[in-house]
Image 1 (cartoon, rainbow, N blue to C red):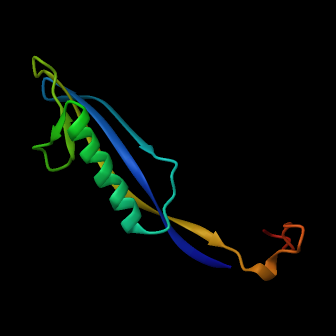
Image 2 (image 1 turned 90 degrees about the vertical axis):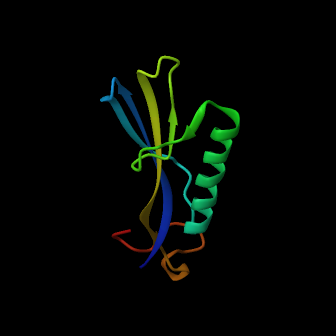
Length: 107
């Protein structure tokens, strides 16, 4: 069985109130990409869309990509996009019969 690298986007959302972290959540987006370049293009498009259509700005913090400030600037939301690798099993055609069921006992 061969292993093939695939890619996903991990989004981190962090909220800082009065310069202290009060909330942090990481989520992996469900879309799987076969090429890193496709994944990067999606992140670039997502960032451009947020900059154009929402109240997010390029973050001055090096550990985040975007920031949205509140009017009083005491509670700010930061976003970070990261590309993560995942290993996907690629099964050869000889491992399947015509019904699509695996012929391998351990598969």
